[in-house]
Amino acid sequence: MIYLLKGDKYMYQISGIPKQTPPLITVYGEGSLSISPDQAAVTLGVIIEGEQLQEVQQESAMIITRVINSLLQLGISSENIQTVVYRIDVQYDYKDGRQIFRGYQVNHQLQILVDNIELTGKIVDTAVLNGANSVTNIEFKVAHPTLYYHKALTLAMKDAHGKARVLANELNVRINPVPQKVDELISAPIVPFSGPLLAKAETTPIQPGEITITANIQTKYSFY
Image (cartoon, rainbow, N blue to C red):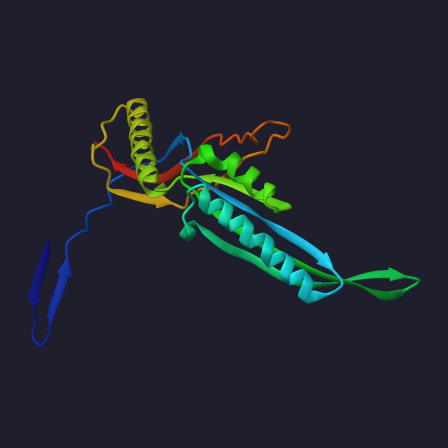
């Protein structure tokens, strides 16, 4: 409430007693779900060494071309194959404190995005059969992580509301069902799962495992 008092020369504004901030119950909610991945990212390629740089480059290019063509024949789209590493390093040996030139190393790595993870093992085997001598990583992920994160947020909201009701019962009060404030807390990034390669099989078996997606929130409920 505001009162206006008029004096001889000035007008004064006097505010009424401000309303106090209502008491709040603050709780944290967490929601998580484990899902099976539907994509794989395979990093593989070729590492070649030799004394003549041009020869090493040509051999590397020939093998990579053969690997790419073999993957295309498996039905992998060219858009899902990209170069992620291409390096040329000079190699040296060290003897009696001296640096002795040994040759050159060309490292050419491809990343293949696999939409059908059941083909992952066959892709690795096919690439190796066609000259690839380096398989550095296999990551499993989901194509649409935001969809699952939103589901985790819903679970986090239910978790927070349940905690608030428990606290309200202990305090012998009732909470307003709609929270006054909801803050989304920074959650850990969705980390792709790296699956192991199991050797000594007709086709290299790959274990995709599961991915856990987590959401965290802070909520504030008023009560009466």
